[in-house]
Amino acid sequence: MPIIKMNGLSKIYKTGKVSVEALRKIDIDIDENEFVAIVGPSGSGKSTLMNIIGCLDTPSTGDYYLDDEEVGRFGSNKLAEVRNRKIGFVFQNFNLLSYATTYENIELPLIFSGMPAKRRKTRTMELLDRVGLAERAAHKPTELSGGEMQRIAIARALANNPAILLADEPTGNLDSVSGGSIIEIFRELHADGATIVMITHDRHIADNIPRVIKLKDGGIVDSLN
Ligand SMILES: Nc1ncnc2c1ncn2[C@@H]1O[C@H](COP(=O)(O)OP(=O)(O)O)[C@@H](O)[C@H]1O
Ligand SMILES: [Mg+2]
Image (cartoon, rainbow, N blue to C red; front, side, top):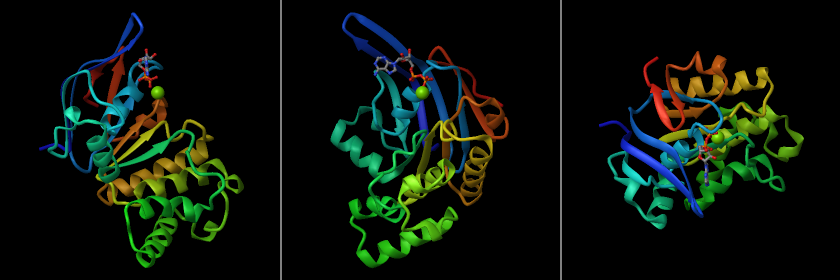
């Protein structure tokens, strides 16, 4: 059983009398420990797909199974619970708390999940170390480069050992060298067993990812490499 399974999934946004079919009849199977890039032009439905995979939104029609649970039919409370337990998010704009230190940013999801203080400290330091920024624990995000901020965001996303790491254009705000170092971290995490789904519109980045799913006008063009 794949960890992500979608059958005939569609998403229609209705705004007043206008409706937009953002995803149409999507079939996707993603196994554990796959590293998948989702590519496609602006407006092709990439973020909509990622929001559904990440349990931030639900499909209009069709099925979505995440780790054997039919989450596509879940209400918002149950959906939030699955999201917190199973998904780690990385965003283009990092989404770090600017008034908190890098340490506190990473520790926050561990506080939310109820981890005791002592284990929290060990885990936070381990995560800082994992992204090579242990010596930056006391820094505020504004004192870091974009690439470093994104590494902190990755450490935070990994805090509660998510089943899936989801990234929406994680290199979109970075220069090519910093972007390359982020992809390198993803590669290492993948080699260590992580399941990663990453949106990118950078064809050069996608070319080096093991599996690429191409979207166009809300449909999959070609899910083979
Ligand atoms: N909340 C929304 N309400 C209405 N239309 C939306 C909403 N979000 C996205 N769309 C529309 O759905 C389509 C797909 O958008 P999106 O998933 O953001 O594409 P991408 O991430 O590939 O740029 C676009 O036509 C967009 O305008
Ligand atoms: Mg988008």
